[in-house]
Image (cartoon, rainbow over all chains, first blue to last red; front, side, top):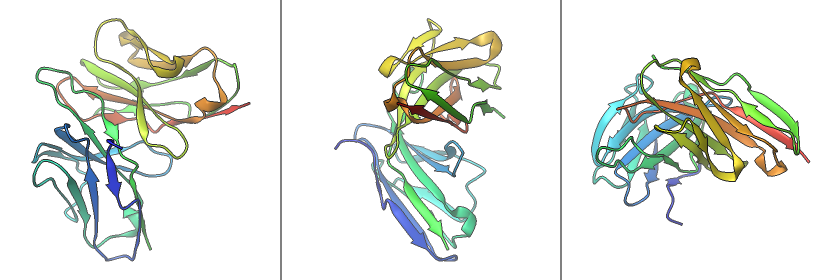
Length: 117
Length: 113
């Protein structure tokens, strides 16, 4: 399978604990996105990378959230001191930016469902 | 800030009925437009996209969408739905020059056989 993969698929944690999610994009894609999706809503943008550079972060991304893409390949999203409001599906997507192009479609992973008790 | 509205949150149809899902956006500049679909238990995947050119766009599985700039709309259509079209449908818009899409809240479509 050469699509976007995410690990773990499900995570249950207690309030106050730290969690880390991993995303492996499609190998030739240079852009990687993180989204959060809650029930009955569309994906909400959190942050994105072009190669290893984090180019933009949403105001939704509080100081407890941090994302990295150290070698321009896989990415991690860490949430520190989790709160019940962090419970959501966390989606990763990747795309290929073509020079001069409009941006390309995004390919989504299956998501990591986080439940904070 | 840019926003995307999908007015139909839940749609229930019988097979062979025609489908139209509404999508309106608030940004007045040049935009790229997308419809994504999420079938039960599967990932979000692209259904169709519009960047420029012919405002009537054809996608996979018989879907099409029409960009009407004057109405800030990008409605999704299919003349005859099938049970297998049961899914969540999301409209997304990004401003030209930005690579960050704004998604609508989605429309849940149920097609009865």
